[in-house]
Image 1 (cartoon, one colour):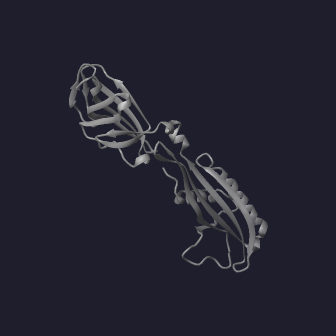
Image 2: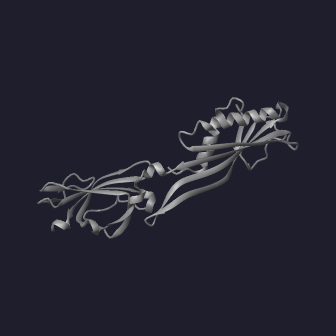
Image 3: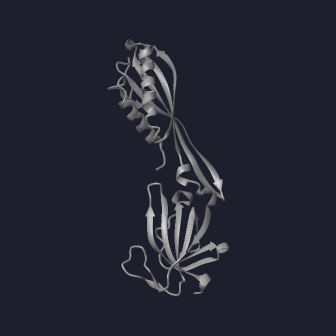
Length: 253
């Protein structure tokens, strides 16, 4: 799923709860609707958004996201009675706790300067937390072979497609149906296994109804009619794997 600012806030909050020096601290937004403690009597961690952005590249006319990055800050307020060193120690402990999330995301933490706030009798240390989500592993190396294939006359962005001719007299069974809708003889039936990412074009093959046509691969000499969706899979990364049966017009209708 796509990384959002709320996900970063949750990640930071989890890291705070792992810090012994910040035990029982108050976690709040950086700009709370209500007034904060004045003077500061216990530790406060205020979380705010710094920036958010995406990196992308265009492949065969298709824009592909390569990285999603969100930067946030955490202002740690500590009572003046605990001293300035305590504020620094809290920041360093939180920095180490955030390092523990590197298996899930790319996390970079920078500890800033410590300052004394005379207005609320507290020391403040700011952490800048940058969390990045890479999509390169999702795409693997198939981004260079992105192409468009027409299903019922509408173009869909595909990552890969594999065609196999099936034995003669093979039944066509639609996805979710309990009996064949048709039979194809004389090795004319072709099975297409299509892999694509819904995020490429916002479309889905799930609702294709029998019979439909697959075209757009004239270089391969393939034009499939009487097509039916045989099986459909959608993983957590919105990647579709669809098995389709159809009659190959290359071998005659």
